[in-house]
Every structure is written in structure tokens, then in C-alpha cells.
Amino acid sequence: MRNGSGVANRNKQDAGRLGGLQTFLRYGSEHFRAMGKRGGRPKLQTLSEVRQLPAPTVNNYKKGERLPNNLKELKGLVKLRITALGGAESE
Image 1: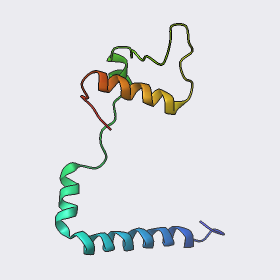
Image 2: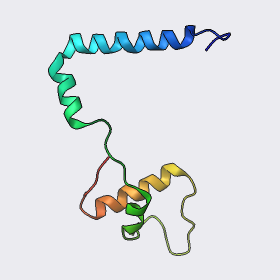
Image 3: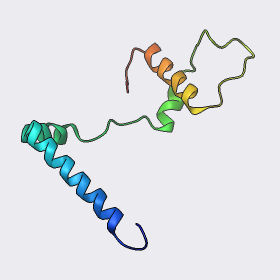
Image 4: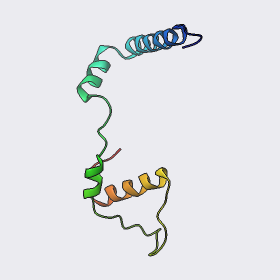
């Protein structure tokens, strides 16, 4: 909100409404029906599900080498682990 007024929120609401209307006009009601059947965003693995996966065997990390401490590289390791298991769960 700007200066205590609802102007900024209202503009976002209008932009979202207009974007949805344009999408409807471009793709039609079947597009929205298909999205509704899919049910939103894909389900991410929970921490307990990730912990149940076997430890990754990555050739890039040698014994005694420190594992990455940033989220991007850790996500890459999890993706490698999933693909090593046969791609049971993908993005």
C-alpha cells in the first residue's frame, strides 16, 4: 500500500484480473478446466521423504571433500539422487 491507501493493492488486483481475462480469451474455458483437474502446483517432497532416500553417490565429490553449503547446489544433489533412483519424482 502507498501512503495508507489501497491504490497499490487495487492495481495488483486489476492486473491479475485483466491477465486472467486475457488468458481466458486466448485459451478458453477448457484451459482453465484442465488446470483445475491438475490441481495447482506439483507436490514437492517433504523432508521425511528426502531423508528416506539413499545417500547420493556423486563423482564430483571426493571422499573428505566438503559438501556444498548453498541451496542451489544441494538441490542439484537431490535431483541427482532422484534420477539415480529412476526418476521416480521429477520437478
